[in-house]
Amino acid sequence: MICPKCNKINQCPCTNCDPDGIKPNKYIRVSEDLVKCSFCESIFHAGDSLNYEWDNMIKEICEKISPDMCIEWFETGRRDSKLDYELAFKEYFNRSPVSISGDDWLRIKREYKLSKII
Image (tube, helix red, strand yellow):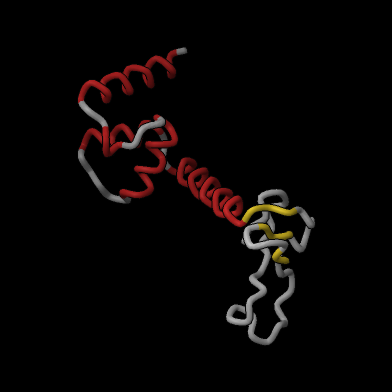
């Protein structure tokens, strides 16, 4: 579990993950939904860690896939690396590529082209 405050990985304390009890840096369960980081001692919701990991993953995808690449991917009908392109598309254009109509697509392209000019 990654701490959203210090970005360090905390190990799971359960006996399935650490049967010998020797792994360092285990998070501490404060309540059913809250955990405490073993590094910075901040308390966070377990879901916050998952959201943080997703945000980091999407950020890394967007470093590889540009808005222009998303447009080309959508217009050519290519569906390689579908999840990566869908996540980048949604991040750049705030819309899922699955639910776009023709008029919406023209508006998205026009707004993107204008944003590049300005």
